[in-house]
Image 1 (spheres, rainbow, N blue to C red):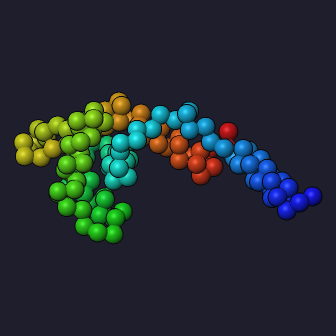
Image 2 (cartoon, rainbow, N blue to C red):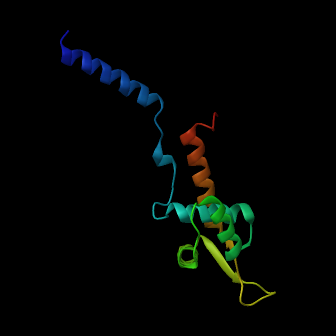
Length: 126
């Protein structure tokens, strides 16, 4: 057996182990145009339910090491409203305040990401 034969054998065993751990990415329908920041916003809205921007900002500042300024937060929320992932409504109690909720599509995206992450880290043992 030559050196190239033994290296081919090693590659073959690596390929075999990769095949048993492969993930069928086609089974997920994840939006690829969302930033990690936007995905975090979706998760927070999902978790908190109807939330004001200031509540989301406070939660994000616990997650991120830096302050979250309005110039980052509100344009991201507006893009998600434009993408029909998030609803923005004026609060009845104070017309100056906005409340954010997920649309049906937004909930679906969060659930897709959760399924994907479960699969990626091996939490889904079914």
